[in-house]
Structure formats: C-alpha cells, structure tokens
Image 1 (cartoon, protein in one colour):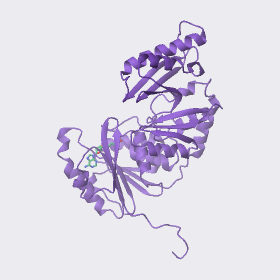
Image 2 (cartoon, protein in one colour):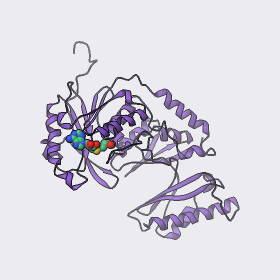
Image 3 (cartoon, helix red, strand yellow):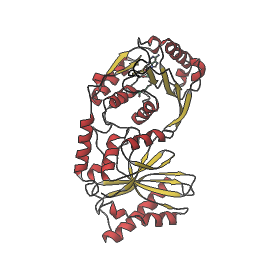
Image 4 (spheres, protein in one colour):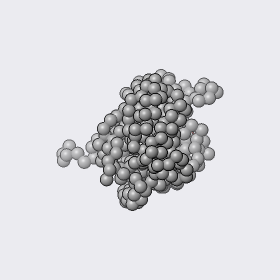
Length: 386
Ligand code: SAH
C-alpha cells in the first residue's frame, strides 16, 4: 500500500500525549511541532488513526509542502502538488482552513481563494476539462503557514475527532472530549485506580476514563469523511478497523469511576451521555456538592474541571469553592488531585503549591493543569517476602 505522511493536529501543549498514542498504535512519528504530530502510514493507518486516537483533532494526509512569500509563489506551489492523485474528476475540493503564523502571507480568505484557483488549474490540465461539476465526494484541504513554509494536507476526518458521538447534551462549559482524554493520560491514573470528578457536568472525564478502561475506541460509533473515498481507502480497510476495535472492547473490566455534580440536571445529562457511550455500567453518577466529597478508600484520583468564573457574578464565589476543594482533598487518604482551570488563584485557595503545572490552550483560552501528586500505592505483586 502507498505510504503517506499523516499529520494529526491536537491541542497546544498536548503533543507529547498524542505522540505516545501514535507510537502505541504502531506508527513511526517523523515530526512533532506546536499543535501537530506527523507520522508515517498507509491507507489502513488513516482508518486506524481516525478510529483509535483519543487526543488528536483530525487526521490529514500530507499533500506536500513548499516555501511561499508571495501569492504567486503560493499559486505555483499549490499548482505543483499532485492533486489528481487524491481528488477525482467530480470531487468537491476547497481550502477549508488556512492558519498562518509568522508568515508574510496571512489573510486566510486570500490564501483560500488563491489555492483553490491553483488546484483548479492543475486539475484542468490533468482531467482535460475547463469546468468541474464538483458534484461528488468532499475533499477539504487544510493549510498551515509557519515562517513562510506552507504545509498542505487533505482532511480525512470531517467532523472533529473530539466528537465521539456520545455527547448529545452538554453543560454550559463542556471540556472537549479529546482534551479530557489527553489530561487523563497525562496523569498516572490507570483503570485499576479510583477516579472521581466532583464537577462532572456532562460527564466528559468519567466517560473518557471509562472508555479507556473498557478499551472502547473513541471513533467506534461515528463516521469519517474518507469513508467515502474508496479510490484511496478500500472499504474493507474500514470494516477491518471497526472489527478490530469491536474485538478489543472489554466490558468486564473492574473500575471505580465516579462523577458528581451539584446540579441534578447535569447528573441526568451525564448519565444519558454515558449510556450513549456504552459505559453507563462502569460509572457511578450522583448529585453531590463538592463540599460533601469523600471516599473511604486510599490512592484515588480527582481529575476535574471546576468552574472558573466565566461570568462575573460567579467570580466572587471562587475562593470559597476552591478552598472547599482543598479542604475535602485534605481529608482523602493518599489521593492525587488534578484540575484544569483558567482561575489563577488555585494554589492560594487550596493552600498548597502544585507539584506540576502545565499550560494548556483550550481553544484560545489559556488554562493551567494543576497537578498535586499523592503517594503511590504499594505494589500488589511485589517479590516474595517483601
Ligand atoms: N467538565 C464538565 C464541565 C464542568 S463545568 C463537562 O465536560 O461537561 C462545572 C460544573 O461544576 C457545572 O456542571 C456545575 O453544575 C458544577 N458545580 C458548580 N459548583 C459546584 C459545587 N459546589 N459542587 C459540585 N458541583 C458544582
């Protein structure tokens, strides 16, 4: 099978997590840049990456790259790429997104229209036609300009990969599913450890954790744009990929995953989302304010996304709320606490300095992932006599 360079964009700050996921899936990573990991794979890799990657935003096939400081160079560079290898004569093609950083060319709409013209010119001479109906399948193109280096990719995914299909209903400020998954993966939490989200909202953290525990691939129950590209990806590869994902599921896994929220409507929504994700049996949801958080066992994890005062009237309540988190956390025995928030007085209110603190961009919003590590549990199967 033909080998491609595949590019997977992700949240800024989480490239290392995505890189590890790609390596675990069995592919060689060739480049890690801000917000993007590039790896090598064939058509089957396109299917497996789309279905299995929990932390990527989408999967692009790299069409090519070139240097451009002027629109003429952008036009010529785009025209020199082998579009006919990807887009059939009746395909609908356009530049869906242009992103430019530290480059001479920066106007997305100009970049988009010039590239489209160049693609048309290229395809005209290849397909010997003056006019394209564009009545067939979709081929959206994404382009990144970084210091005048133009990288062009074909989007194989369609709707962003964070849309797993289970979150029909959301809270006011839901965390993206791929971001939640990446944050869980940044912690030492594994399926045999306790996980509690005391501000669970629509249930994203508990649901993502339960899907990991049961080995449910995030893209098992959704579709991808390139499923309609049989000339590039034979249908059988998709069937095999979904089959592989179905066989990997293990619903007999033993877990202790809980989600609480003070708002009964949120708890109802979280339960419904968990049902849609197929993990309702693995999560215990309950209406409970954080002020009443407790757990009898040791060595658990709190992984959560507390309110951070998006609206002014909520801001005044934050010190007391975070102090309550700190207070309840102190009463848990040997637990670890992980929270992502845009609120900047977390350590002050909780009364402890975080062991680690990682900057993460949630869309355009700068947030921090505060990590308070607890002790590790003693090894269960240590050497005899130990
Ligand atoms: N990660 C969630 C969003 C969390 S938003 C998601 O993906 O949907 C914060 C949540 O905290 C809201 O649902 C709100 O109802 C809840 N909340 C606010 N104050 C609380 C308190 N004192 N105790 C428990 N939950 C609270």
